Image (cartoon, rainbow, N blue to C red; front, side):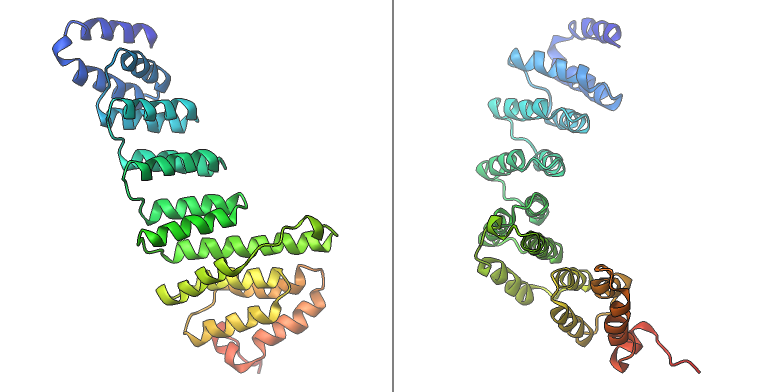
Length: 290
């Protein structure tokens, strides 16, 4: 491959008046053929000479670098574009945020996010939700709430996915705290103010109508933190709103006791409650035996 590239370069050097189109096309071909390393070498060499390829070619190169986990090179590409006063497209910022949050590197994801905002590009609901999800995955719930508040200040309307991720993150944190307390580590658990989270949850009720998945996340969280009655109350609210529970919802309720190894109690308390009450029988298609 290296030999062929040199031959192509030798030919392109005879066409100086069209170097931008020709070398951009060459980078595109390298990226398409999965020769990302060779494409980056071309980019690096020409950028040091004060030349930059077309923005679309830079975007393709960045995608290839992200796929190959060459994150430092991807950041270098982004920085050099800015040095040349070429504004990266929003999709380029999104790709970097996506790979960093999937890699659990929220420090870099936040750097890209802040850079995007600094460049006067308003993040959309997808970008905000990615950042919130990333912080929740690395157990940084309050940073997630901070991103959510910034989202509201910019009048970006959250959707049910955004709210569900926050709810799930909060409930998982409660579960971790409950387990730490159970194992005698309660001194290590930091006490925090829950009011910002509950303010967000209250806003959810005003902005959108929770769906089955959102209710199931809440029910599952209450079950895992031994708040079975709260889970049942949510189930009742769900039914009252005309939402049809799915198998995951029922499994979350019944596993409250089964997960503790108390299968007998799980049947008598959970199954009896859900199946043998008339208001639930119609939701699961239960019929009295002949």
